[in-house]
Length: 469
Image 1 (cartoon, rainbow, N blue to C red):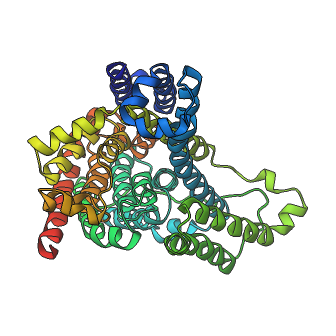
Image 2: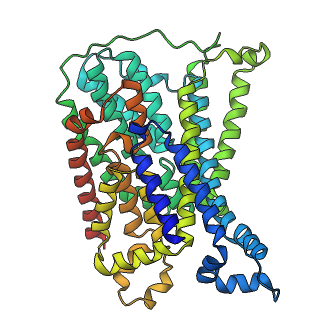
């Protein structure tokens, strides 16, 4: 049954990687694999439990005779719900941050981006919009940031080829910006929530590699753009008889939203509660501010006339279901014990986290980046500092303690390596759908630039560790 569950996961990864060809939604595949994986697991529950959790199961029985019903209750209460809780915490965090960005976007808090990039000079527009994307995605979800920036760019740039080049730079900036904070990418959120990294240490090490991975490919992509762009600027967006919040009100909402998210790491350090609770708190405060500023629209029942970004909304729901499905599927595979065996083989035969990180980046460029990251995280438990004395090779195992090098290498490589091909990350898929872009065009015009930026960023990360440790 372990073999069947592993084959199911591999088949799911293959279908997810080829979803742009099969036209089967990757979220549906992930949810299916996660669901069926646990059904298969519980069918052979006694064997798995006696192999992985014999002492806990004996304590659960408390002297009673083991039975099929008892082992199912044990799996549900002591194993399955643990993975559901971890996945739900990430999904709730994504739900809160995506709701925050929708509230800010609907109130025109990001209209300054359109004002800032108002130019026909290709280089200035390219760097302005990617800089804004890099900064915003570091504070908010990178998928919603990408969708918002692609929409702004699509309404301004008239040439489809120019839009594809700038769109590739936007996708890369969003993924690079999201990977160096614990709240900008689902991978960082999971690492942070599991205690593998702390917010300050994570950002301190990944900030410079992320900048390199964004700047170098953007320089290379900018050379294919003409000096002057075919651009025009539409009128200010209409938001349903909107009272058009004045500038200071938009600034207040932006400070509440972004500033609140910056406070979440502090909230987590003080309370030790899951970060999603802090994100929900920020959402609730921003929600109240939104209703106070828009009370006239509320009273006039005009809020329903606002244009809701349905593409963003639909994509957000898909991302949340996809994350939930992948995390449940990886939980089922992890409980079979096969991932522990795989990590032992890698430790013995490879024994190098940088080679492992490079391999994870290449896999992320072929398969789904988030799935590769979850596989790496599931294979290696976090080693407590006091346990290092128990290992023969304590220097190598130090890479897997809290704030160890492995977690940063994994997060960086999967995020930036996932841009090697556009269909292996949600942001790239959004670009493909919006601009009807083919994989062959991306491979010819962008993959080489992304590869150079990724390798240079990885080299910078290695140099940081070499100089410090």
